[in-house]
Image (tube, rainbow, N blue to C red; front, top):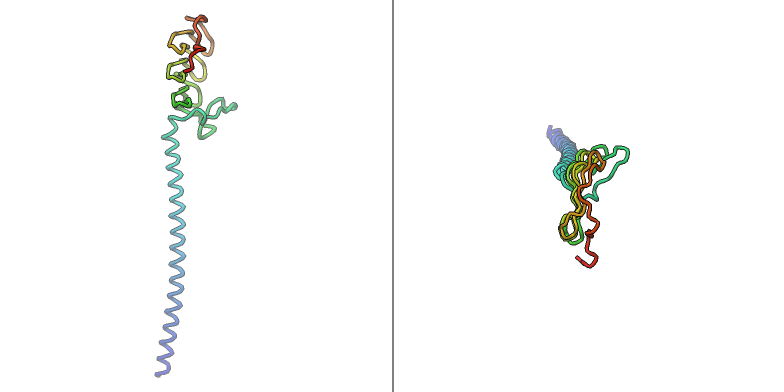
Length: 175
């Protein structure tokens, strides 16, 4: 009986060891799967936050970030089929705004203002869904009105001021 008892203890230890190894393998497998799921969910979370940043950031951009799509006849930034809505600006090397444009559903819409490198307004125009409308006023670098006209659906309807005697930029001015 003594011999059988020792054999039973050895068999029990072997069984427990084999059971422990199988259990550990299952635990490692489950932990690996969970880790992979957490990493995958974390990446999806990051891409969602990237999309949120695009949504937040989409109200303003550098005009160079926009692409004109001829088939859709609109400007887009992130998605080709979704026209850009918001404002874009271009800058001079000195940091001054060169031009500020407004868009709605990929179309020029609202006021477009261009500036000289000293910050003085050069030109102001109004657009309604890609059609120039309302006033256009062009200024000299000194701030004098050199052109003022009215537009309707892209057509010039009336010229209010046209001064060819005033130069837009003084040729002797280095600024």
